[in-house]
Image 1 (cartoon, rainbow, N blue to C red):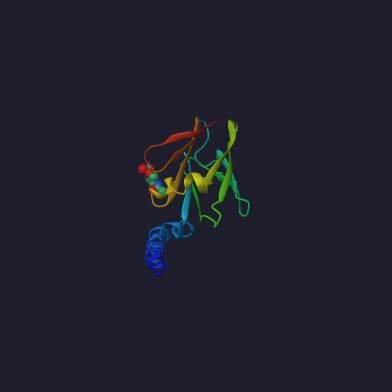
Image 2: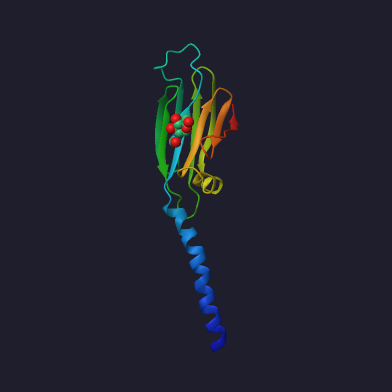
Length: 144
Ligand SMILES: *[C@@H]1O[C@H](CO)[C@@H](O)[C@H](O)[C@H]1NC(C)=O
């Protein structure tokens, strides 16, 4: 028995040392969620909002946000203990299209949004809502 203990204790210790820092870090990272309006102006004057965003989680309502082309709307969140953090948005391209999308889902985004300044990058465009993990390559994850 003494022998098993002398092996098991250091093994357990080593295991926690490897796993703890990463597991804990999930709850300490502060994620930045960026949503940029990259819609074309068409015939609108540039100072007139052409996009209405409304985002909320179960606990936080970020409210209505009118946005002009080129504007970037950003907020921050941590991942909760149960890793169920979720921000849900509705984007309305005034006079054109509307759709809902998930701006942050802990399971989906905890790793991919670590790549670039702990940021989830979204870009609202004429044919959909694009995601990027590096602010360079864009994927149309929510076509209108
Ligand atoms: C993303 O890239 C654009 C254009 O290259 C730049 O203007 C913007 O500041 C970048 N956004 C962030 C959050 O770094």
